[in-house]
Image (tube, rainbow, N blue to C red):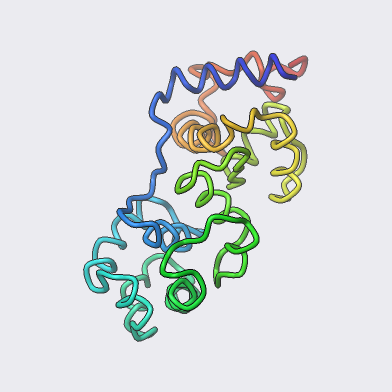
Length: 210
């Protein structure tokens, strides 16, 4: 398994040298907001919505004091906009009241914030603080790691635990970003492009002996 994981990581590094988060942001809390908006929404849509939202409320204080109905209008096209708008405002208020205006750097603190679950917390820990072992289990990660035999099942927390056991901690955050890119341009959910896939040797669906 260790050799397999190392080979997969090396191939993904060659294909995607820059393992960058697809969401656009300039400040720590803006990433927190963008990740919340991305739930059941594409990153491309979020990146269309956030410039207007961040321009309307250019500081953490402004966002924390924003009328929730106004935020709803800005984020309506992201889906589930009422829940997301409420979480955004309440989360920003908590950053000011409990965390000195900064996104906190521990899982325990992050999970207290409205709208922040383990997926969001892991992304924030990895991207903002470079915390080793941060595993972001989105749908791409769960699907592809299952195909590659790195994990089993579809429950995010269980897959996260399984990947923590096999991924080098210093590689895990970037691995997850690369998996997202790979899931968009090659190993798609419905019609994976197996003919051009560099990982077929390790894929159990393509190669049952993998």
